[in-house]
Image 1 (cartoon, one colour):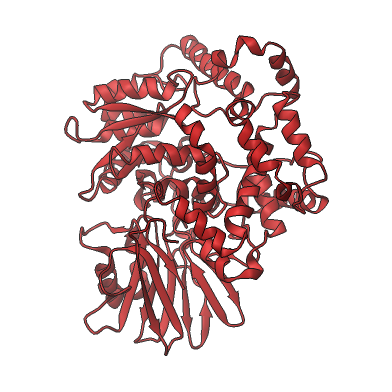
Image 2: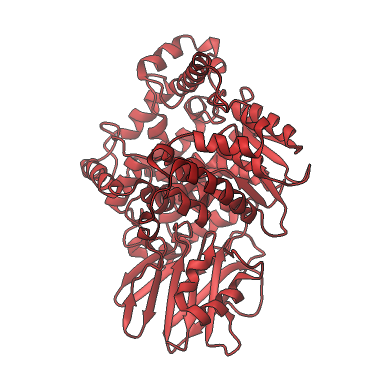
Length: 590
């Protein structure tokens, strides 16, 4: 798990508890654990945790509060994290993570032994029997874009559930959750006026907590509502919060055009981070690294996130973002099961994929926001977060505990509405509220007819770009081929999105697709139907149809095999190639 050569490794052994703890990527301080004065309570916390009421180092403060309040002290800890606590007084070891589960801990349990790690690749290196894809996990990943119910892609490896504090002692294992979602679900809903009043009180507090610390911070700014909320309430001095926006190769996308206006009004600098020819030239290596870093959770499209966030690190080591705003404030469900392409996968995989839709429906029952916060975040959003955090420290006010708790109190008429967010922006900075978003939304809204026409136009532009990219039907792909000399992609693409893999796979990335998927190993995978790769690749490259999504999956699966499921020596070679671009992160292994 050492992603750069300067990373140091530390270990601690407690023979009486048969506990073995280690970390890598930390500065050398002489001990893997932070101990209390009597050296009978020690802890290691990794991630970006913090206490609301103190700017002191987290680990010593946590040890002190654990002595005072026991495991209830975990309720006071914000941010994303995972960790281990060694309590020699009570002869127990505790594994824990944040309440949203972004601090992944991978587990393997057998024969009375538990192996855990913050990265699945270390477990795969020592567990040959797990170095194969789990059919159920694979089918869920193919259908839903992520594995459900705290399973993983790998046989015999699972995830520590969100908000957990698992206690290991001579008496066995007590699997506990220190935070119960019912705590937030059971709150009484507020009236619309009371909700928006509390929103305007709590959001600035959550934002200030996201701006904590002495490390330089830059804003990843888009044309949507959530980044605008941050800018409307940020009180940084002019020039103190540099802004940047990921942009594409064809034209300035809506995010870039709007972000420049917002930054100028706020007195902050703005710069584009282009994802174009240089990215495409590095795609093969970036795709491999994206799959490896995320333990297969992120597909090859994560290469763009890896590239852009690596460049963002040049602005500041901390990236402030509006990520999770639409999910937590407006209850946006970001993933759903989809049918697999006919004839691409083996019958067993197709059967499991149909079952995945049923599993998803069962998990989605109950409180909608609980599904988003405690299932969608650790299962779906983690993939992109894992790639981002490898390059830069990512912070968002929208995962602040007080703000999410308030969202559970939103009245029905406010829970999915844009208006509370728009009014919050107007209250913070009326000028920002009057700038149309990437979907043409402003506050106060214009007349009904103007508003309807503006929204319809922006919806049309977004749908047209989707239809010319990921969502292009086969008949349109064949028609587009016949007029390829006109390069109609320059007319449709780049207005909303900065990545265009449908056309890239047919153009600058075609050789990469062939190199990976026409390899004899790729064609022999047991989960594929006969001739599946030849049909998918041939159809797409000839423009007989659109197989963008299928190529994402096929490329990613093959890279999972090459980087994670092969012999450990291969993992070391992949990691060594990643040294130049992957930032060091704290990790845990037992």
